[in-house]
Image (cartoon, rainbow, N blue to C red):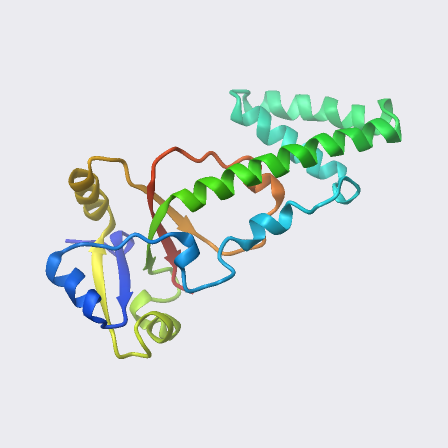
Length: 208
């Protein structure tokens, strides 16, 4: 029996090809540029215009720590090295050298963002929603309104593990799954996110 945490749902507006997908037991994976939200992913490009002067010492320290953790350093080793770096930034370099550090950070950020944008645009996505501790997905009126043609459509329930397994077997490739929680992202979130080379992904939105 499917437990609450394993259930995911997809809403359909009841179009001809929705019924065809239902009859043919297939899912459609779309480019992120074809999503109905025109602002999806736009924050990536907006971050690229951050100037070195806008970057704080804390940004540098967080970026440095995440980079250390991502290259095999233990948490304590990363903390110690970040402490040394903090002392360097505060006491041992000139304002010009500090600005250069921030320029290096900005350039790395822009490069990482461009890679991420290119990677995301090359992928295809299929979006679902799951329950959270406060609301069931099928009780979310906003989902019914936006994705099911104002309560005229229908919703399907899937077991997320079985769905991913069947898609991988059918397509002979790994299907990535990730839960999307909308919030304000900082540059370090983009720089520290490791994205694989797979071409398809499943995105989960939590009911809110």
